[in-house]
Every structure is written in structure tokens, then in C-alpha cells.
Image 1 (spheres, rainbow, N blue to C red):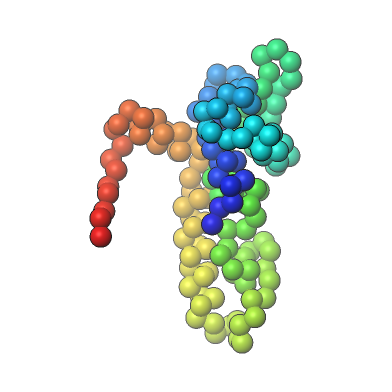
Image 2 (cartoon, rainbow, N blue to C red):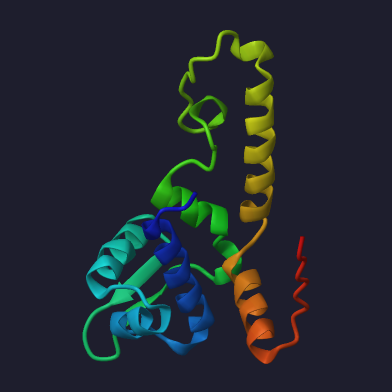
Length: 152
């Protein structure tokens, strides 16, 4: 599950992606549009800047902007930078592997399922750029995106 920090980071990057060709965006504007506490957003943007996803310009006309085109920033990369591995348990993490304590990891059926879950999540998040999300956002705002609602 994403932390609040991870959720806010993805919303901040989306906001910057939506304003990509419009120049730097004021942090106060991001905070207001995305309903993110300003002090928390300052910390998140600093982390995103350190990770190379955003950049900033000081002074008049300054603010934050995407350091790379939104087509080059994946949702998976941002989530990993802020919240760490996507793996639901440490024994299937590709970057921060840790023993989970099962009797025999080589034949652990649960580990196999957790790996499948990690792989599915990675496929979706790593295959989705902020350009994709921006386009989806614009379609939703215009009411042209088909939403399928299942009730069970």
C-alpha cells in the first residue's frame, strides 16, 4: 500500500506533468490543486528533486517543473523513489531482498504468489508514464473516458 508520501508525490508529479510546457509551477498552486499540506509538499518535492524527477527555478517566474519529459517518467519509478520497493514482502523484492522466514523459500507457494503480484504491479506501474496519466486525466475531465463500474 502506498504511504501518504507516495500518494502525494505521484499527485505532485502529475500536476507538473499537466503543466509541463507552461513553465515552472508555484508550490502553493500544486498544494492547493492537489490538496497536499504545503510543508509536506516541500519535503516531497525535495525528495523528487534529489531523485531527478523534478527541478526548480528560484526567483520571479520560478517554481517547480518536470526535470524530464513526462513520457520519460514512469509511475513505478516515482513510487520506488519515494516509498521503496513494490514487492509486498521482502523475499520477492528485486532491490531490497530479505529473508521472510518461510521454511524453504525455493518451494514456498506463498512466495510464488507474492512474486506474481509484484510482477503484475511492476508491469502496470513501469508501463505507465506521467504522459499516459496526463492524457487519462484530460479524458476524464472531458468526460470521454469510459469508466466501467462493476457492482457485486
